[in-house]
Image 1 (cartoon, rainbow, N blue to C red):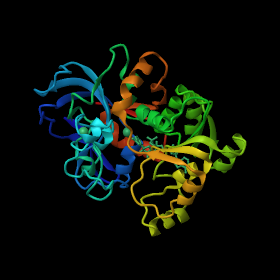
Image 2 (spheres, rainbow, N blue to C red):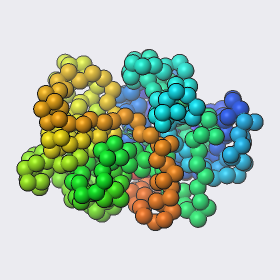
Image 3 (cartoon, helix red, strand yellow):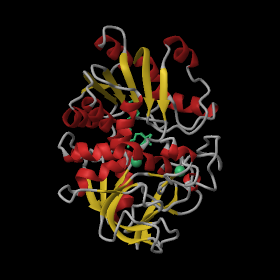
Image 4 (cartoon, protein in one colour):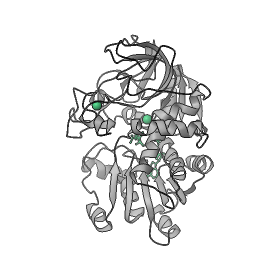
Length: 387
Ligand code: NAD
Ligand code: ZN
Ligand code: ZN
């Protein structure tokens, strides 16, 4: 089959690899019909999350069931499903606590309590196409993919919905939703989202659904701010032009936002000086976006961290967390816990997800599209690949 294979930093090629096979009774094989490139894939592409061996990329995908293992009762050949990006068994200590991204069975080689994502130990649950540290699974930017625990992850999708309408239930819609859910948004809040990438925009859409009074998006790319206004009806701030924290305080009577969501992560834009400082402090990228969120949130407010961080950060503003009495939550999103409710929101027409797609291309163009998405060329926001 054809697949987008990661070889080394900035080197992803579409080539022929072995077809996946059923390896466990609870597996299924999916024929992928649509798959997307994620900002998280860029961390691998840019060498921020290391991977030594070649691996098929892709954790956002959906398709048609091609084959099922003998243990699978809930799916049959021909079913059309979307698949949550975390790989979770559904039966272990953490899955039973409704913490699927901490599943202790899906990443046997590198799982552990340490929480390391750049060392070879201590990461959480397996993730499709997301390095050996996250289980070494081949991903879904391919014609076929093996899906473990197929009786727990994949969800059937209604026939009347197109791939584009439901594809983002694999990751970015539940992830955006998690940012709002972790902040316990109940109605009436001002929610600021740092980062108007696909995840940030999904967080903004989720904030409205949960009853936010005001939704504000911050970015440094004018075209992405324009999409946030159009697709998520957000007010926007260009942090390249103004001090966004000051603007947010002005907009909120001096208090700051009730909730700030970091949808940027460690690959925030930086000056040369900031980069040098991060190198001296042995930091992977920068925690600049998180610091801005902690500044822009009101006293006693919540900061939800969706953006990925991959190392210790020595100047973490612990004193601000303490003095402002902030609640800080983050992590890989609990897709399994949210997905059924979110499918019903799509089905009822309460949210539109596909309006963030800027590029739909054959899988064969994956290499070029990684480059375009990474460099924010051609007004690229979200790429869908068709195997
Ligand atoms: P993306 O790279 O497309 O978006 C990041 C956005 O941040 C870009 O629009 C960029 O212009 C903006 N940005 C960069 N520096 C900035 C700064 N200093 N101030 C304001 N904005 C700035 O990626 P995405 O797909 O939207 O993902 C966003 C983050 O979420 C990534 O770190 C990704 O790995 C992470 N993610 C986490 C989960 C999870 O489960 N927690 C799931 C999916 C993605
Ligand atoms: Zn993703
Ligand atoms: Zn488990």
